[in-house]
Image (cartoon, rainbow, N blue to C red; front, side, top):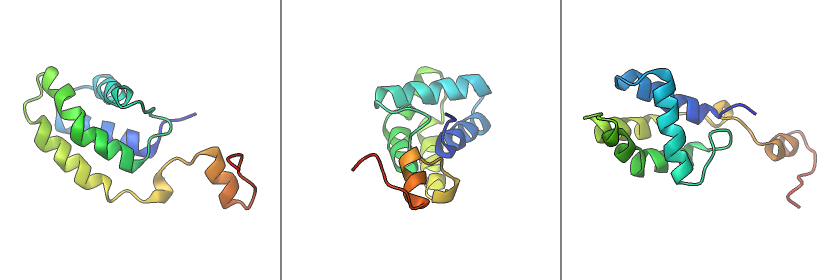
Length: 105
């Protein structure tokens, strides 16, 4: 399963706003998500916004990123603009949208 659009978006913003490379940015976000008990393939924009606000600044600080808190605040603001249609859907959500039944019943 692919990572969600919210995860990819945060990683892209982190890479653009810091000296971290692609792998470093993705790894840093993955570690922050792991601390929160979340996975890149299923994280929602709301969930990752909390991680970006509360956990990611510390992860960036430990990697020597000086503007981490300000960058995280900016990323959180931008996350609000992601449309729900751009975010990866769970299988249950796809079946519900298509008129099928959910296994959560």
